Image (cartoon, rainbow, N blue to C red; front, side, top):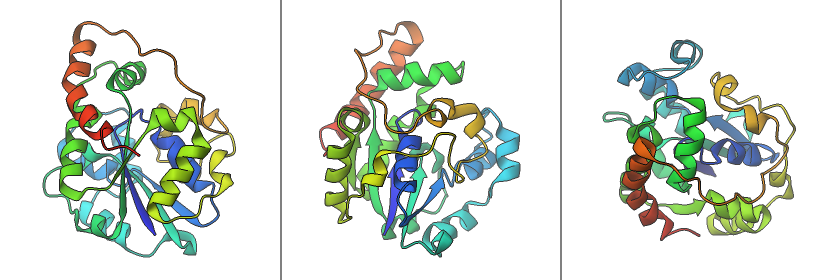
Length: 232
């Protein structure tokens, strides 16, 4: 089985990669198209030059790996993808061989979290529009990060059942300190999850944002709501 898990940043996506990576029957891959996206788009991201230098930046070669031999002779492959990395012209045919799952999170939480790590926040960096468009194109399942945090075992069991995979309790915890599959960008983005050994508990009330941040949330909400209506 190949799982393509699609989400924007700050969506519980790294914790989900660690969850599947804790299974003995899965290899995992962290944002395969990040380096190709940076190289092709010219986007100014933290650690841009290091990312391009450390990871394959040819989207054709990355796409071939997505559908090629699964690393470490594992039977299953989990790929953590971001929809806004898939810019026009990047191959998408490989996704037809995957179980496509869309991981979502309320925009207010995403904007508040992303702003801690990067001073300038723009709607296009968060992937809400691109994720909704990708769902329209390739379909798949939808799961909300809030539901996972509220009851990890229940929601991961539901997800596994929906895709025809046996649930494994190993998915509920992982070693502190990161995963060997982490991209080089982990030092900037993954501090909290590196300190974790499992999913954090339920989140509190939605953050109250104003000004530009509130405007980004308002623009993102219709895309989030459309996918949330289809969630497991």
